[in-house]
Image 1: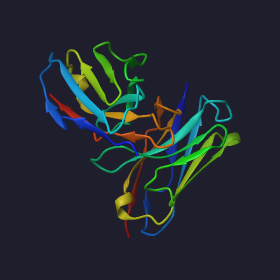
Image 2: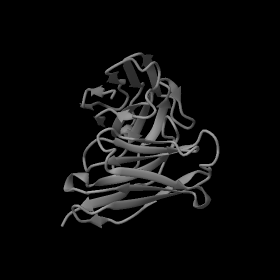
Image 3: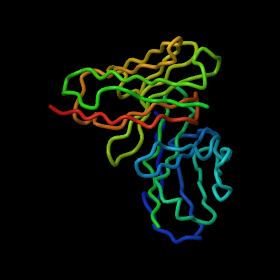
Image 4: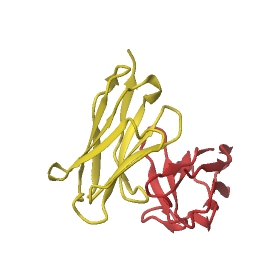
Length: 107
Length: 117
């Protein structure tokens, strides 16, 4: 199975900061990488699919990049409502999806 | 609009079998290219994909749990059912169903299942 890692596990930032979260796959997954935001007590929300496609309705401060094994989620200017845990998920092997361990963003 | 809702017991005893139902609307599992997955999240921990069923009745299971899981669908009722046998306290988690064959664009609100005697 493909293993996913994320770094850092958690981070503290201030409003207006540029925040970058890394996700790494144990083997090449092309651009089959998706990002989710999960706020406390809520279901995850899809932010970015196929490594860089921002979902409709997601603020433009969110962006994704990468291919192969290394990927990045960037929040260009952190807002208070961005307090959440962020997960990456590979969909390269559709019979065995895997999520990363998550990155908790605190303000 | 697309909605999904999970239902099932909130409490199960160790060794029992868990049956969860995902009832959805706004799409059909008889349509080509549609899939529904089950995903769980133990309290304070990460998401774990469990199983997926496709419009053509193909089924996929987590390698680590496949001996305990069965997924099925009732297209006429717009429902997907997951059964998990031999429940253990470590299976305590919020269980979600979600749409899509690749990325999960719609999720249910989740249902918390506690495994305790």
